[in-house]
Image (tube, rainbow, N blue to C red; front, side):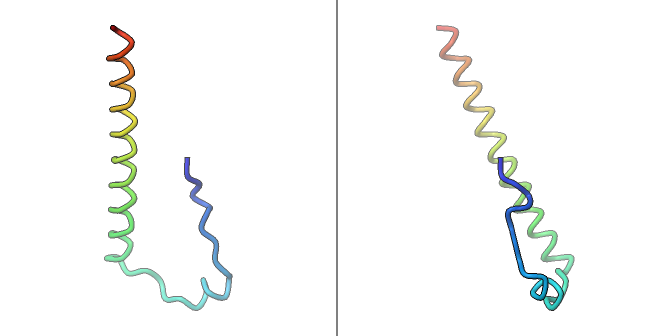
Length: 56
């Protein structure tokens, strides 16, 4: 699973960049949620196909 702490930045960069706007934050969260759902659906499909083959 991907680590939440894999992104690194220099402290100076973090302190000089303006904060994210609400719209930017919302877009980032939408992308994260969409990616997580895609991964969960793929996992569920993989498990379902595995169960289907085990019954035969």
